[in-house]
Amino acid sequence: MDKLKAIEALGALAQNTRLDVFKLLVQHEPSGLPAGEIAKQLEVPQNTMSSHLSILARADLVSSKRESRLIIYRANLSAMNALMAFLLENCCSGEDCAPITNQLERLCQ
Image (cartoon, rainbow, N blue to C red; front, top):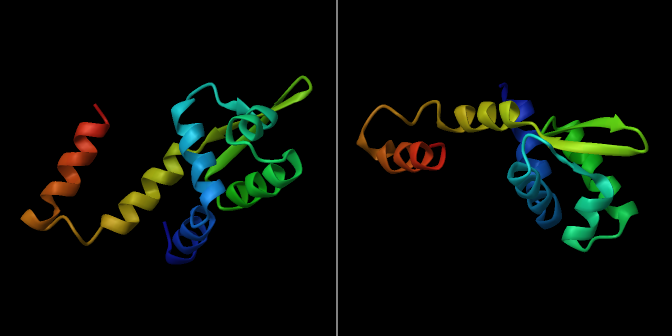
């Protein structure tokens, strides 16, 4: 991931609702959630949610697919993995990174 993409992704996540959306979608992988259900669960008006989802999609953190009348959103875990790798790429050269890598290993089991 290049620096500009990382900044865009971090900027997209640097807002309460968008961070909540991404975390909610991660919990619903791999099936995803319809936009209306995301808005309902987070108690956000649908037109506002549409704007948040667009920002996350431009940052490549979510993807969407039309299924009949619904648009299903999914977290783009490969983009998040790339962002995490970008943030940690110069870190893991010693024991200072052990707490981070241990936590990631624990979460990914």
